[in-house]
Length: 504
Image 1 (tube, rainbow, N blue to C red):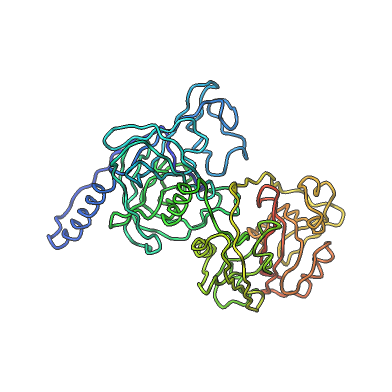
Image 2 (cartoon, rainbow, N blue to C red):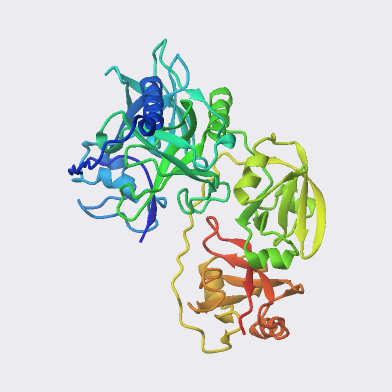
Protein backbone atom coordinates (compact mmCIF):
# COMPACT_ATOMS: atom_id res chain seq x y z
CA UNK A 1 0.00 0.00 0.00
CA UNK A 2 1.40 3.38 -1.00
CA UNK A 3 0.75 6.52 1.02
CA UNK A 4 1.60 10.18 0.57
CA UNK A 5 3.97 11.55 3.18
CA UNK A 6 5.58 14.88 3.90
CA UNK A 7 9.30 14.67 3.18
CA UNK A 8 10.51 15.78 6.60
CA UNK A 9 13.39 14.18 8.44
CA UNK A 10 13.88 10.96 10.32
CA UNK A 11 16.90 10.27 12.48
CA UNK A 12 17.65 7.02 10.70
CA UNK A 13 20.08 6.15 7.92
CA UNK A 14 20.96 2.73 6.53
CA UNK A 15 23.71 2.14 4.00
CA UNK A 16 24.13 -0.64 1.46
CA UNK A 17 26.77 -1.51 -1.12
CA UNK A 18 26.35 -2.13 -4.82
CA UNK A 19 29.01 -3.35 -7.25
CA UNK A 20 28.93 -4.02 -10.95
CA UNK A 21 31.41 -5.35 -13.49
CA UNK A 22 32.47 -3.19 -16.45
CA UNK A 23 32.46 -5.38 -19.55
CA UNK A 24 33.48 -2.88 -22.26
CA UNK A 25 34.89 0.62 -22.66
CA UNK A 26 32.61 3.25 -24.32
CA UNK A 27 33.90 5.27 -27.27
CA UNK A 28 34.75 9.00 -26.94
CA UNK A 29 31.66 9.87 -29.01
CA UNK A 30 29.47 7.91 -26.61
CA UNK A 31 31.07 9.49 -23.57
CA UNK A 32 30.84 13.13 -24.72
CA UNK A 33 27.05 13.69 -24.11
CA UNK A 34 27.33 12.06 -20.70
CA UNK A 35 30.34 14.19 -19.81
CA UNK A 36 28.45 17.34 -20.82
CA UNK A 37 25.49 16.35 -18.65
CA UNK A 38 27.84 15.55 -15.79
CA UNK A 39 29.48 18.98 -16.13
CA UNK A 40 26.06 20.64 -16.08
CA UNK A 41 25.11 18.82 -12.89
CA UNK A 42 28.41 19.81 -11.30
CA UNK A 43 27.87 23.47 -12.23
CA UNK A 44 24.33 23.44 -10.82
CA UNK A 45 25.47 21.84 -7.57
CA UNK A 46 28.30 24.37 -7.21
CA UNK A 47 25.98 27.29 -7.92
CA UNK A 48 22.87 26.35 -5.95
CA UNK A 49 24.04 24.34 -2.93
CA UNK A 50 25.55 27.34 -1.07
CA UNK A 51 22.05 28.90 -1.00
CA UNK A 52 20.44 25.73 0.42
CA UNK A 53 20.06 25.49 4.20
CA UNK A 54 19.43 22.76 6.72
CA UNK A 55 16.66 23.45 9.20
CA UNK A 56 16.55 21.94 12.67
CA UNK A 57 13.35 22.42 14.68
CA UNK A 58 12.50 21.81 18.31
CA UNK A 59 9.40 21.74 20.43
CA UNK A 60 8.74 20.57 23.96
CA UNK A 61 6.88 17.36 24.73
CA UNK A 62 4.02 19.24 26.35
CA UNK A 63 3.19 20.73 22.92
CA UNK A 64 2.75 17.31 21.39
CA UNK A 65 -0.66 16.95 19.62
CA UNK A 66 -1.59 13.85 21.64
CA UNK A 67 0.29 12.37 24.60
CA UNK A 68 1.26 8.77 23.99
CA UNK A 69 3.76 6.15 25.04
CA UNK A 70 6.96 5.58 23.14
CA UNK A 71 6.42 3.70 19.89
CA UNK A 72 2.70 4.40 19.68
CA UNK A 73 1.15 6.28 16.77
CA UNK A 74 -1.29 9.11 17.46
CA UNK A 75 -4.93 8.03 17.27
CA UNK A 76 -6.38 8.39 13.78
CA UNK A 77 -7.73 11.85 13.15
CA UNK A 78 -5.48 13.64 15.66
CA UNK A 79 -2.78 14.42 13.11
CA UNK A 80 -3.21 15.99 9.66
CA UNK A 81 -3.11 13.37 6.88
CA UNK A 82 0.45 12.73 5.74
CA UNK A 83 2.01 14.03 8.96
CA UNK A 84 2.07 10.79 10.93
CA UNK A 85 5.64 9.95 9.86
CA UNK A 86 6.78 13.50 10.53
CA UNK A 87 5.57 13.25 14.10
CA UNK A 88 7.26 9.86 14.51
CA UNK A 89 10.41 11.93 15.11
CA UNK A 90 8.86 13.28 18.32
CA UNK A 91 8.11 9.92 19.93
CA UNK A 92 9.82 9.52 23.27
CA UNK A 93 9.28 9.59 27.03
CA UNK A 94 6.66 11.92 28.44
CA UNK A 95 8.84 14.80 29.57
CA UNK A 96 9.68 18.43 28.84
CA UNK A 97 12.87 17.49 26.98
CA UNK A 98 13.09 19.14 23.53
CA UNK A 99 12.05 16.97 20.61
CA UNK A 100 13.83 17.50 17.31
CA UNK A 101 13.14 17.14 13.61
CA UNK A 102 14.77 18.37 10.42
CA UNK A 103 14.03 19.82 7.03
CA UNK A 104 15.49 21.98 4.30
CA UNK A 105 15.08 25.45 2.82
CA UNK A 106 16.73 27.89 0.42
CA UNK A 107 17.80 31.53 0.67
CA UNK A 108 15.88 33.98 -1.51
CA UNK A 109 17.38 37.31 -0.40
CA UNK A 110 20.85 38.43 0.60
CA UNK A 111 19.52 39.71 3.93
CA UNK A 112 18.27 36.31 5.06
CA UNK A 113 14.74 35.49 3.88
CA UNK A 114 14.33 31.74 3.39
CA UNK A 115 11.60 29.65 1.76
CA UNK A 116 10.62 26.29 3.24
CA UNK A 117 7.53 24.17 3.93
CA UNK A 118 4.86 25.12 6.44
CA UNK A 119 4.88 21.61 7.88
CA UNK A 120 8.60 21.90 8.70
CA UNK A 121 8.23 24.92 11.01
CA UNK A 122 4.57 24.93 12.09
CA UNK A 123 4.05 25.05 15.88
CA UNK A 124 7.76 24.75 16.64
CA UNK A 125 9.38 26.41 19.65
CA UNK A 126 12.79 26.87 18.06
CA UNK A 127 14.04 26.99 14.46
CA UNK A 128 17.76 26.81 13.69
CA UNK A 129 19.28 27.28 10.23
CA UNK A 130 22.61 25.81 9.15
CA UNK A 131 24.54 27.05 6.10
CA UNK A 132 26.96 25.19 3.86
CA UNK A 133 29.86 27.11 5.44
CA UNK A 134 28.84 25.59 8.82
CA UNK A 135 27.51 28.83 10.30
CA UNK A 136 24.26 28.46 12.26
CA UNK A 137 21.57 31.05 13.01
CA UNK A 138 18.41 31.19 15.07
CA UNK A 139 15.51 31.89 12.71
CA UNK A 140 12.13 33.51 13.20
CA UNK A 141 9.01 32.46 11.33
CA UNK A 142 7.86 35.46 9.28
CA UNK A 143 4.66 33.76 8.16
CA UNK A 144 3.26 30.51 6.89
CA UNK A 145 0.36 29.29 4.79
CA UNK A 146 -1.05 25.82 5.57
CA UNK A 147 -3.10 25.85 2.37
CA UNK A 148 -0.05 25.84 0.11
CA UNK A 149 2.39 24.34 2.65
CA UNK A 150 4.70 27.33 2.16
CA UNK A 151 6.49 29.19 4.95
CA UNK A 152 8.93 32.12 5.09
CA UNK A 153 11.58 32.30 7.80
CA UNK A 154 14.30 34.91 8.41
CA UNK A 155 17.85 34.89 9.75
CA UNK A 156 19.89 37.99 10.61
CA UNK A 157 22.78 37.96 8.14
CA UNK A 158 24.07 39.88 5.14
CA UNK A 159 25.54 39.16 1.70
CA UNK A 160 24.17 35.63 1.64
CA UNK A 161 24.15 33.48 -1.53
CA UNK A 162 20.69 33.30 -3.13
CA UNK A 163 18.90 31.08 -5.64
CA UNK A 164 17.46 32.17 -8.97
CA UNK A 165 13.80 31.48 -9.73
CA UNK A 166 12.77 29.74 -12.94
CA UNK A 167 9.39 29.45 -14.68
CA UNK A 168 7.67 26.24 -13.63
CA UNK A 169 5.02 26.79 -16.31
CA UNK A 170 7.71 26.20 -18.96
CA UNK A 171 8.96 22.99 -17.34
CA UNK A 172 8.11 19.97 -19.47
CA UNK A 173 7.71 16.32 -18.58
CA UNK A 174 11.01 14.54 -19.26
CA UNK A 175 13.29 17.49 -18.46
CA UNK A 176 16.21 17.00 -16.08
CA UNK A 177 15.85 18.31 -12.53
CA UNK A 178 17.94 18.16 -9.36
CA UNK A 179 16.70 17.99 -5.77
CA UNK A 180 18.98 19.51 -3.11
CA UNK A 181 18.43 19.18 0.61
CA UNK A 182 19.20 17.31 3.80
CA UNK A 183 17.62 13.83 3.57
CA UNK A 184 18.07 11.45 6.46
CA UNK A 185 20.35 14.05 8.11
CA UNK A 186 22.84 13.78 5.23
CA UNK A 187 23.35 17.51 4.77
CA UNK A 188 23.47 19.14 1.33
CA UNK A 189 22.73 16.06 -0.73
CA UNK A 190 22.10 16.40 -4.49
CA UNK A 191 19.97 13.91 -6.43
CA UNK A 192 19.00 13.93 -10.11
CA UNK A 193 15.93 12.86 -12.04
CA UNK A 194 13.32 14.20 -14.43
CA UNK A 195 10.00 15.98 -14.27
CA UNK A 196 7.70 12.95 -14.19
CA UNK A 197 4.36 14.79 -14.38
CA UNK A 198 2.76 18.16 -13.76
CA UNK A 199 -0.52 19.24 -12.18
CA UNK A 200 -0.67 16.35 -9.70
CA UNK A 201 -3.24 16.80 -6.93
CA UNK A 202 -1.49 14.69 -4.26
CA UNK A 203 -4.80 13.89 -2.54
CA UNK A 204 -4.76 13.88 1.25
CA UNK A 205 -1.44 15.67 1.73
CA UNK A 206 -3.01 18.83 3.17
CA UNK A 207 -6.13 17.16 4.54
CA UNK A 208 -9.71 17.78 3.45
CA UNK A 209 -9.11 21.39 2.51
CA UNK A 210 -11.22 23.01 -0.19
CA UNK A 211 -8.51 25.61 -0.85
CA UNK A 212 -5.56 23.20 -0.95
CA UNK A 213 -3.37 23.26 -4.05
CA UNK A 214 -3.69 20.53 -6.67
CA UNK A 215 -0.82 21.62 -8.88
CA UNK A 216 2.25 19.68 -7.73
CA UNK A 217 5.25 18.90 -9.91
CA UNK A 218 6.04 15.18 -9.77
CA UNK A 219 9.66 14.06 -10.03
CA UNK A 220 11.68 10.87 -9.74
CA UNK A 221 14.69 12.72 -8.32
CA UNK A 222 15.22 10.95 -5.00
CA UNK A 223 13.42 12.78 -2.16
CA UNK A 224 13.53 11.40 1.36
CA UNK A 225 12.54 12.54 4.86
CA UNK A 226 14.54 15.71 5.49
CA UNK A 227 14.22 17.01 1.90
CA UNK A 228 11.07 18.97 2.76
CA UNK A 229 11.51 22.63 1.90
CA UNK A 230 14.53 22.15 -0.36
CA UNK A 231 14.68 23.35 -3.97
CA UNK A 232 13.85 21.44 -7.14
CA UNK A 233 16.19 22.90 -9.77
CA UNK A 234 16.12 22.78 -13.57
CA UNK A 235 19.12 22.20 -15.85
CA UNK A 236 19.80 25.96 -15.92
CA UNK A 237 20.22 26.05 -12.15
CA UNK A 238 16.87 27.80 -11.57
CA UNK A 239 14.48 26.79 -8.81
CA UNK A 240 11.13 25.59 -10.20
CA UNK A 241 9.67 24.01 -7.06
CA UNK A 242 9.84 23.35 -3.32
CA UNK A 243 10.25 19.64 -2.54
CA UNK A 244 7.41 18.73 -0.21
CA UNK A 245 6.24 15.12 -0.25
CA UNK A 246 6.92 11.56 -1.27
CA UNK A 247 4.57 8.78 -2.33
CA UNK A 248 5.71 5.80 -0.32
CA UNK A 249 4.52 2.70 1.45
CA UNK A 250 7.55 2.71 3.77
CA UNK A 251 8.18 6.38 4.53
CA UNK A 252 11.23 6.39 2.26
CA UNK A 253 11.85 7.17 -1.41
CA UNK A 254 9.99 4.86 -3.79
CA UNK A 255 10.41 6.79 -7.02
CA UNK A 256 7.78 9.51 -6.67
CA UNK A 257 8.27 12.95 -5.17
CA UNK A 258 6.16 16.10 -5.27
CA UNK A 259 7.18 19.75 -5.36
CA UNK A 260 5.16 22.96 -4.96
CA UNK A 261 5.49 25.13 -8.11
CA UNK A 262 7.81 28.06 -7.44
CA UNK A 263 5.41 30.53 -9.09
CA UNK A 264 2.84 29.73 -6.41
CA UNK A 265 5.42 29.75 -3.62
CA UNK A 266 6.75 33.12 -4.76
CA UNK A 267 3.27 34.66 -4.70
CA UNK A 268 2.73 33.35 -1.18
CA UNK A 269 6.15 34.58 -0.08
CA UNK A 270 5.61 38.08 -1.50
CA UNK A 271 2.24 38.38 0.29
CA UNK A 272 3.65 37.14 3.60
CA UNK A 273 6.56 39.59 3.49
CA UNK A 274 4.43 42.53 2.33
CA UNK A 275 1.14 41.98 4.19
CA UNK A 276 1.93 39.40 6.87
CA UNK A 277 -0.62 37.03 5.35
CA UNK A 278 -1.67 35.63 1.99
CA UNK A 279 -4.07 37.44 -0.37
CA UNK A 280 -5.55 34.71 -2.53
CA UNK A 281 -8.42 35.11 -4.97
CA UNK A 282 -11.03 32.36 -4.99
CA UNK A 283 -14.07 31.53 -7.10
CA UNK A 284 -15.72 29.99 -4.04
CA UNK A 285 -16.16 26.44 -5.27
CA UNK A 286 -14.95 22.99 -4.34
CA UNK A 287 -13.67 21.41 -7.54
CA UNK A 288 -12.97 17.93 -8.87
CA UNK A 289 -11.36 16.60 -12.01
CA UNK A 290 -13.73 15.61 -14.80
CA UNK A 291 -14.40 11.90 -15.35
CA UNK A 292 -15.56 10.36 -18.64
CA UNK A 293 -19.10 10.11 -17.26
CA UNK A 294 -19.00 13.77 -16.16
CA UNK A 295 -17.95 14.83 -19.66
CA UNK A 296 -20.70 12.74 -21.22
CA UNK A 297 -23.34 14.24 -18.93
CA UNK A 298 -22.11 17.77 -19.67
CA UNK A 299 -22.10 17.22 -23.44
CA UNK A 300 -18.33 17.70 -23.78
CA UNK A 301 -16.45 16.06 -26.63
CA UNK A 302 -13.26 16.05 -24.55
CA UNK A 303 -12.64 15.02 -20.96
CA UNK A 304 -11.47 18.37 -19.63
CA UNK A 305 -12.35 21.17 -17.23
CA UNK A 306 -12.99 21.43 -13.49
CA UNK A 307 -16.25 20.15 -12.04
CA UNK A 308 -18.08 22.20 -9.42
CA UNK A 309 -18.73 19.84 -6.52
CA UNK A 310 -19.61 22.30 -3.76
CA UNK A 311 -19.67 25.95 -2.77
CA UNK A 312 -17.49 27.55 -0.10
CA UNK A 313 -20.43 28.90 1.90
CA UNK A 314 -23.26 31.40 1.85
CA UNK A 315 -20.95 34.05 0.38
CA UNK A 316 -19.60 31.96 -2.49
CA UNK A 317 -18.95 34.30 -5.46
CA UNK A 318 -19.66 31.48 -7.92
CA UNK A 319 -23.01 30.60 -6.37
CA UNK A 320 -24.04 34.26 -6.29
CA UNK A 321 -23.15 34.58 -9.97
CA UNK A 322 -25.37 31.62 -10.92
CA UNK A 323 -23.08 28.59 -11.13
CA UNK A 324 -24.60 25.30 -10.00
CA UNK A 325 -23.24 22.09 -8.55
CA UNK A 326 -22.38 19.77 -11.43
CA UNK A 327 -21.29 22.59 -13.78
CA UNK A 328 -17.95 22.02 -15.50
CA UNK A 329 -15.77 25.13 -15.74
CA UNK A 330 -14.11 25.10 -19.17
CA UNK A 331 -12.58 28.59 -19.37
CA UNK A 332 -11.90 31.78 -17.39
CA UNK A 333 -11.63 35.05 -19.30
CA UNK A 334 -11.16 33.01 -22.45
CA UNK A 335 -8.29 30.92 -21.07
CA UNK A 336 -9.05 27.19 -21.39
CA UNK A 337 -9.29 25.14 -18.21
CA UNK A 338 -8.08 21.57 -18.74
CA UNK A 339 -7.97 20.31 -15.14
CA UNK A 340 -8.75 21.53 -11.63
CA UNK A 341 -5.06 22.36 -11.16
CA UNK A 342 -5.31 24.38 -14.36
CA UNK A 343 -8.24 26.35 -12.90
CA UNK A 344 -6.23 27.13 -9.79
CA UNK A 345 -3.29 28.28 -11.91
CA UNK A 346 -5.54 30.60 -13.97
CA UNK A 347 -7.25 32.11 -10.91
CA UNK A 348 -3.87 32.77 -9.24
CA UNK A 349 -3.25 35.43 -11.90
CA UNK A 350 -6.09 37.58 -10.50
CA UNK A 351 -6.54 39.63 -7.35
CA UNK A 352 -9.47 39.44 -4.90
CA UNK A 353 -12.20 41.83 -6.02
CA UNK A 354 -11.56 41.41 -9.75
CA UNK A 355 -14.41 40.17 -11.96
CA UNK A 356 -13.82 37.32 -14.41
CA UNK A 357 -15.94 35.60 -17.06
CA UNK A 358 -16.39 31.95 -16.11
CA UNK A 359 -17.65 29.68 -18.90
CA UNK A 360 -19.28 26.39 -17.90
CA UNK A 361 -20.72 23.35 -19.62
CA UNK A 362 -24.08 22.43 -18.11
CA UNK A 363 -25.68 19.26 -19.47
CA UNK A 364 -25.22 20.09 -23.13
CA UNK A 365 -25.35 23.89 -22.85
CA UNK A 366 -22.62 26.52 -22.55
CA UNK A 367 -23.18 29.39 -20.14
CA UNK A 368 -20.95 32.30 -19.08
CA UNK A 369 -21.15 34.02 -15.70
CA UNK A 370 -19.44 37.12 -14.36
CA UNK A 371 -17.85 36.16 -11.04
CA UNK A 372 -16.40 38.72 -8.64
CA UNK A 373 -13.51 36.93 -6.99
CA UNK A 374 -13.36 36.86 -3.20
CA UNK A 375 -10.39 36.54 -0.87
CA UNK A 376 -9.66 33.20 0.74
CA UNK A 377 -10.07 33.28 4.53
CA UNK A 378 -6.92 33.54 6.60
CA UNK A 379 -7.40 30.13 8.15
CA UNK A 380 -8.61 28.01 5.25
CA UNK A 381 -7.47 24.67 6.68
CA UNK A 382 -10.19 22.26 7.61
CA UNK A 383 -9.93 18.72 8.91
CA UNK A 384 -12.73 16.22 8.51
CA UNK A 385 -13.98 14.94 11.85
CA UNK A 386 -16.70 12.55 10.74
CA UNK A 387 -15.85 8.89 10.42
CA UNK A 388 -17.08 6.62 7.65
CA UNK A 389 -17.84 3.13 8.92
CA UNK A 390 -19.89 0.85 6.70
CA UNK A 391 -23.21 0.43 8.48
CA UNK A 392 -25.80 -2.33 8.20
CA UNK A 393 -28.80 -1.31 6.11
CA UNK A 394 -31.87 -0.20 8.00
CA UNK A 395 -34.45 -2.96 7.79
CA UNK A 396 -37.26 -0.45 7.39
CA UNK A 397 -37.32 1.11 3.93
CA UNK A 398 -33.79 0.10 2.85
CA UNK A 399 -33.30 -0.62 -0.87
CA UNK A 400 -30.58 -2.11 -3.05
CA UNK A 401 -30.06 -0.44 -6.46
CA UNK A 402 -28.05 -2.80 -8.63
CA UNK A 403 -28.06 -0.40 -11.58
CA UNK A 404 -25.41 1.67 -9.86
CA UNK A 405 -24.36 -0.76 -7.12
CA UNK A 406 -25.49 0.94 -3.91
CA UNK A 407 -27.77 0.25 -0.97
CA UNK A 408 -29.63 3.19 0.57
CA UNK A 409 -31.89 3.78 3.52
CA UNK A 410 -34.14 6.61 4.70
CA UNK A 411 -32.68 9.43 6.73
CA UNK A 412 -33.00 8.73 10.45
CA UNK A 413 -33.14 11.39 13.19
CA UNK A 414 -30.11 9.73 14.81
CA UNK A 415 -28.05 10.05 11.61
CA UNK A 416 -29.06 13.70 11.13
CA UNK A 417 -28.14 14.51 14.72
CA UNK A 418 -24.86 12.61 14.60
CA UNK A 419 -23.61 14.52 11.56
CA UNK A 420 -25.29 17.83 12.50
CA UNK A 421 -27.08 18.05 9.18
CA UNK A 422 -28.83 21.24 8.15
CA UNK A 423 -32.54 21.10 7.38
CA UNK A 424 -31.85 21.12 3.64
CA UNK A 425 -29.55 18.10 3.91
CA UNK A 426 -31.97 16.04 6.03
CA UNK A 427 -34.29 15.39 3.07
CA UNK A 428 -32.13 12.89 1.18
CA UNK A 429 -31.42 9.18 1.41
CA UNK A 430 -28.36 7.74 3.13
CA UNK A 431 -25.94 5.42 1.35
CA UNK A 432 -25.61 2.34 3.54
CA UNK A 433 -23.28 0.30 1.33
CA UNK A 434 -21.44 0.44 -2.00
CA UNK A 435 -20.87 -2.76 -3.99
CA UNK A 436 -17.16 -3.24 -4.71
CA UNK A 437 -17.92 -4.52 -8.23
CA UNK A 438 -20.49 -1.85 -9.07
CA UNK A 439 -20.05 1.40 -11.03
CA UNK A 440 -20.47 3.57 -7.93
CA UNK A 441 -17.44 1.98 -6.25
CA UNK A 442 -14.85 4.72 -5.50
CA UNK A 443 -17.39 7.32 -6.63
CA UNK A 444 -19.78 7.14 -3.66
CA UNK A 445 -19.10 6.03 -0.09
CA UNK A 446 -21.21 4.89 2.88
CA UNK A 447 -22.74 7.69 4.99
CA UNK A 448 -23.00 10.07 2.06
CA UNK A 449 -26.48 11.48 1.47
CA UNK A 450 -28.05 11.60 -2.00
CA UNK A 451 -29.93 14.90 -2.12
CA UNK A 452 -30.80 15.47 -5.74
CA UNK A 453 -30.60 14.05 -9.24
CA UNK A 454 -28.94 16.63 -11.49
CA UNK A 455 -28.88 14.71 -14.80
CA UNK A 456 -30.53 13.55 -17.05
CA UNK A 457 -33.47 15.20 -15.25
CA UNK A 458 -33.42 17.37 -12.18
CA UNK A 459 -35.38 16.17 -9.15
CA UNK A 460 -35.04 16.05 -5.38
CA UNK A 461 -34.33 12.61 -3.92
CA UNK A 462 -36.35 12.61 -0.70
CA UNK A 463 -36.98 8.87 -0.40
CA UNK A 464 -35.92 5.50 -1.76
CA UNK A 465 -39.05 5.60 -3.93
CA UNK A 466 -37.86 8.87 -5.53
CA UNK A 467 -34.47 7.31 -6.22
CA UNK A 468 -36.22 4.34 -7.82
CA UNK A 469 -38.18 6.72 -10.10
CA UNK A 470 -34.97 8.51 -11.04
CA UNK A 471 -33.15 5.31 -12.02
CA UNK A 472 -36.08 3.41 -13.59
CA UNK A 473 -35.89 4.93 -17.12
CA UNK A 474 -32.11 4.65 -17.38
CA UNK A 475 -30.46 1.95 -19.49
CA UNK A 476 -27.03 0.35 -19.41
CA UNK A 477 -24.40 2.93 -20.42
CA UNK A 478 -26.50 5.96 -19.45
CA UNK A 479 -25.02 8.50 -17.06
CA UNK A 480 -26.76 9.70 -13.94
CA UNK A 481 -25.41 12.60 -11.88
CA UNK A 482 -26.30 13.25 -8.25
CA UNK A 483 -25.78 16.03 -5.76
CA UNK A 484 -24.60 14.38 -2.54
CA UNK A 485 -23.66 15.55 0.93
CA UNK A 486 -20.44 14.00 2.21
CA UNK A 487 -19.10 13.94 5.79
CA UNK A 488 -15.53 13.91 4.40
CA UNK A 489 -15.70 17.45 3.00
CA UNK A 490 -14.64 20.14 5.44
CA UNK A 491 -15.16 20.32 9.15
CA UNK A 492 -18.93 19.93 8.99
CA UNK A 493 -19.28 18.07 5.70
CA UNK A 494 -20.17 19.51 2.31
CA UNK A 495 -21.81 18.80 -1.02
CA UNK A 496 -20.36 17.52 -4.28
CA UNK A 497 -21.59 16.31 -7.68
CA UNK A 498 -21.01 12.66 -8.63
CA UNK A 499 -21.53 11.02 -12.04
CA UNK A 500 -22.12 7.26 -12.31
CA UNK A 501 -22.53 5.07 -15.40
CA UNK A 502 -25.50 2.71 -15.18
CA UNK A 503 -24.45 -0.94 -15.54
CA UNK A 504 -27.76 -2.83 -15.78
